[in-house]
Image 1 (cartoon, one colour):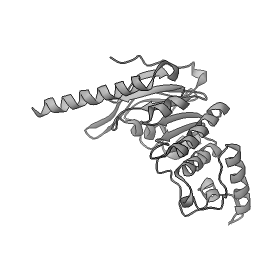
Image 2 (cartoon, rainbow, N blue to C red):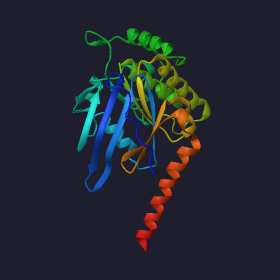
Image 3 (tube, rainbow, N blue to C red):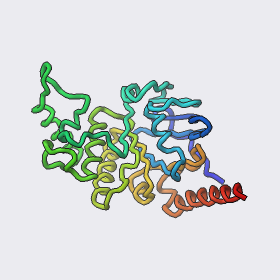
Image 4 (cartoon, rainbow, N blue to C red):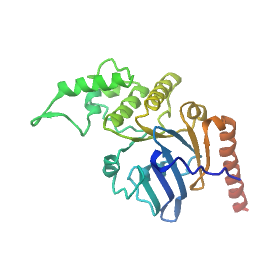
Length: 265
């Protein structure tokens, strides 16, 4: 038995909606019938067991994969996302676990990666340093020296730089794929505070994939559970709990395990 999926806010309050999205890779069906919506300024938590299709869904929304079926709406307009660059031009950006930062480059060079400021053919390093300091400070991200190599920073600081870069590039829908993975409590708190700050400003809408349900409930407005290629659960965080979310995922695992055992007999 699954919870009914919310129809979502009125169209004018939505920045993103997907309807009946499907994606197959040969004989494997990764997404079967996904319906998802994201309100303006909302933080949506997306959870599910390993292999549920969460990362595939993110890659479809960001233009990396083309869906086999379904419709995508951005700000109420139906779109066909041709590429990652096309999605970015519509304000959709993604921060993956591997961050796409260049460890050997400075903080400020990473902030302007592929968007470098120039004076003629030369890099305007002075301007990029100043803008990087200003933007990170405005977002409450504490980096002692923007000249430092990214490799020398903590995991939380690197994640914060990747998020700040997306927001600075005018992202309006930010997709965060496991931003808290393999982080200690202090580093995780830095990212949670950053997400909470972005949420308070209302300048960006966020979908966050995470496995720590307590952290998800701390920063998200609403939770979706992806199971068997579809969203089966959609509730406000105030209406659910860590125990309920855990029970859902554990029940799916047990059902899958029972089916595998039965198939081996």
